[in-house]
Amino acid sequence: MADGLIDNNGASVTVSLQVTRPISSYTVNLADESPVGRADFVDSPDGDRIFFHTEIDQEFGGQGLAGLLVREALADSIRKNLTVVPVCPLFARHLRKHGEEFVADGGVFHRPTPADIALVKRSVAEAL
Image (cartoon, rainbow, N blue to C red; front, side, top):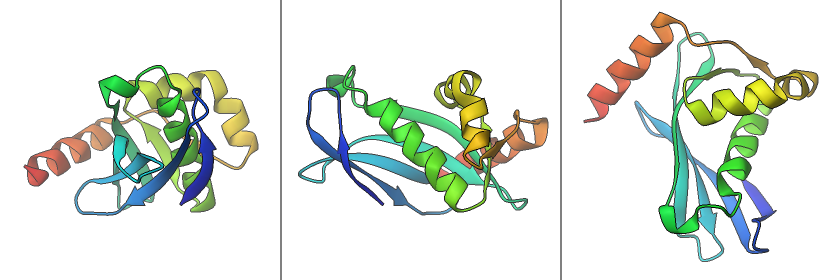
């Protein structure tokens, strides 16, 4: 999906989309294609992309990978005309800081509703 990304150490990384049901993910991968982090989401029937969990392997912390992952996931949501729902604290924090820029680029987001939270809980239970 997104090649040519560089982390804070100058290493090349990629972000790819893994579509599965009920939970899909954007993954950040090293040059050798090994995954080192992911942003999990659920797509609602209404066209919302609900991001609920993001993690980077501990040994790769501080390299800017979480920020790259969030930005690429949000950019892909814009390309696909999806409304972003930031349940994940990392996505919520990013949109609090950069929400105006995201909207100016064509993005749409809203705060999570109880129905969004219920959908995430059902999806996680189904995935177990």
